[in-house]
Image (cartoon, rainbow, N blue to C red; front, side, top):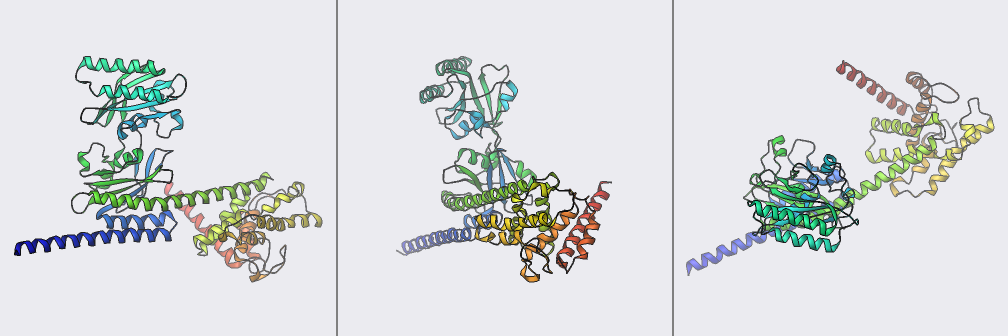
Length: 527
């Protein structure tokens, strides 16, 4: 009776401990969700999230990779407890390798439009792969043995009927004894007949070499030598390519594990979990990798938790990436708009970009925050946009302007304001039209269009004014040669406190002197 009571108490304690652990995990998920809703900057967001994931799963460290399909690599966006700046994992095995690793048939109509395609063999043979179908085959125990690959369907695209025929052959290859030369020849004949049946240009049969992590061709029509296709992509790469989560209890006993990162860092990976991060269209955009369970190996419960967390992270990462892309698109559009103005005269080409560069340097010297600098840079890029309405003949005139011509030139700031007021700017940039259109205002009221004075002029417009004058003085114009920076600073300082802000001029000079000092130091190092 007493023993039974002790057992019941022990069971109750165990259940309470498991319940407490589950509550802590749920709290961890809620906390991560709370963090995600408050941060949209990917570089700030990910360290917070991944640290919390390590805590929730009791892992030694965690890494989040994003897929770069153009370069066919996984790039780490956050690698906890690693001193190296970035980890890159190669994804280089191509479509036939993918069919082996995923255990699925792959059918593509245009290989070169599929980012997973590896054109390495085409480069060696001169053959250009167009349509491609590849399917794995297995042994009786269900282990992948290799793959069948067909290239270049005569009619352009492999059909569903072709897929059925390929799968029939791969099912028959299960019974092949690869140690028997007779059976191997039979397999080759089957693939040859399959190629004729599907009306394609080439066929290949590969066997998987698990020791070396390669696919080796048993038969490759039209090629004199064997093909060796590397599967050296690591566990995280495998998760990215196949879209499947992986739980590896002993990394060094798994031939798919890539030891190179450990060799670089001196870190020893024991166990790891990898879960792909998928966007709303179910495409892989990254991978979460959690390494070295502090107590034993990762459990199914750990995997379930990481999958749940990956869904939360996916939403935030996708939003952050989308925001970055929108910002890049917005910025590139502004740069095109600015370039269209500068293109009116080859002597002013790049003027808006240079004014923006000087304005940003001044702002940094004055201690502006990144958000303020962003606003300033947009206004600086667009400060001359109203010149779209300025007569080219007057803009390019080499002699002195008449009063009427100068009045026409001055009209460009009003045009800038009118045009930019018609553009939709998000709330952050709502003052851009005003800032951009005030860059010719002067402290003493002698500027244009409104003759604003002192504090009535937006401070960012005062910065653009100094940057604009400095760039104009140090660049060649139709009416004069370029001045040296020192001569330009002399002119600026003659107007300091009168027409132009003295502190802004001082900041520009300081930045300029720092740049000269750095160049001098680099020259001494190089010599």
